[in-house]
Amino acid sequence: DILKKALTLTATANSKTYDGTTNATGSVSLNGVVAGETVGTTGSVFTFADKNAGTGKAVNVTGTTLPGADSGNYTLTLPASALADILQKALTATVSANGKIYDGTTTATGSVALNGVVSGDTVSTGGITFTFGGIEINGDAQVLNTGGKPIHGVFASGDIVGLFFHNYPSCPGQTRNVVFSRLAGRHAAAQGL
Image 1 (tube, helix red, strand yellow):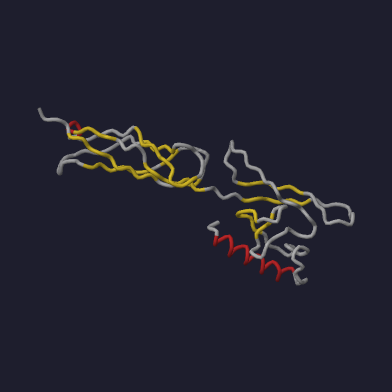
Image 2: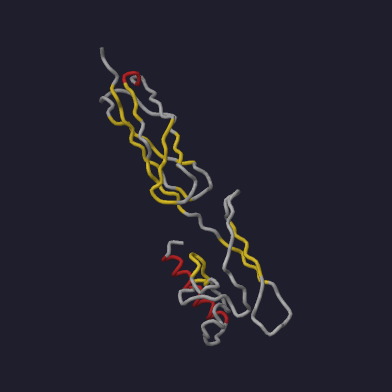
């Protein structure tokens, strides 16, 4: 008897940005084919174990078959899984503030609409306080929540940010806008946003 030679498959899965699915992509390569023989792979399906963002996530590889003139001489062992990342998806927000009749306070109301949320996902904004004194920020132009802590990935610039919170000296609107826009951009880039 001439027994079929066992081949192994090396699978490499590609990382992706979160899209709400377990769909994955990747490539496979065969190990152990005798030199000069024609054997390939087809039908490989890559699937993340779950849809959630994270690093070093298992990607299952199924459906791989061996086409080619010499494929009948081989058997194939599929790997248990490969590893790849699902990166967090960046969202943008549209902020709308409501006007009011003067009441002697800086209290304001408004709404925040998130853009880019994957269909079927539930994502909300919380901890944003509207005031007529400007959005509360820290020295890195990060927007602060009601507890005074930075909201990850949220930066603000413009001519009224922080006006009453840090007692910044009054200056022309464009100067203030340039300064805080530069701070916001620099720190957002440092966080990889």
